[in-house]
Amino acid sequence: MDIKTESSDAEPARGKWGDIRRGVILTLPMLVVFGPIGATFGVIAVEAGMSPFQTILMSFVVYTGAAQLAAIQLLIFDAPLVTIYLTTLVINFRYLVLSATLAPHLSTFGFLPRLFYGLQLTDASFAIHVSRFAKAPPRRVEVFTTNIFAHIIWVVGTSIGVLAGSAVPDPTQFGIDFAMPAMFIALAIPLIKSKAEVAVAITSGVAAIGFNAIGFQHWTILAATAVAMTVAFGAIRWKRA
Image (tube, rainbow, N blue to C red; front, side):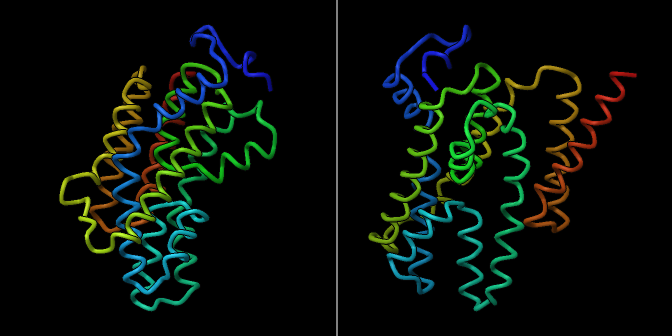
């Protein structure tokens, strides 16, 4: 697709290098999250017995922080491979909801670009793109620059953890683990415009806290999403009535 055709009235026209520059700028906040957490994963994985090559390869191929950290913890306790597979599958179920939300915006992309996008979908990239797509149609070069640069940050962070070992501090000591939720909140607030959306946002937040408190663990997000979708469906039906 010609890049010029992807511009809209909501965004100034710019060329390929402008889209690349914008994609990199959008990804910079991920340095605060992906770098330290990726390094932490690198340290834990090596200490758990994985080789440096296996650790870096896992970050490159699997590329999902929560699932990778959970898998390593299960490996430490000698859990069966089936348990590890099922656990990571449950953790990553949330990407079904995230990808379904973004799919209508990617209708102009071909099958392979959509597949490549899906392989690089993360919580952070979703947060950025759902906000961007609400303002203007997706610009392919910008979108993939954001995804690829974020992937590079994650792999580099893991590599630093592998090389630096225990010298890498725990990011939770500095509150960096809250950076991801903070990013989501900051990007989600401008998208909440109607009373129904306010109700869904509040319901999903309360449900997530409640389900986590009673021990839903990895099912928390999916359960909270189901509740939020039910509330949203009810609000739409009530509005149409």
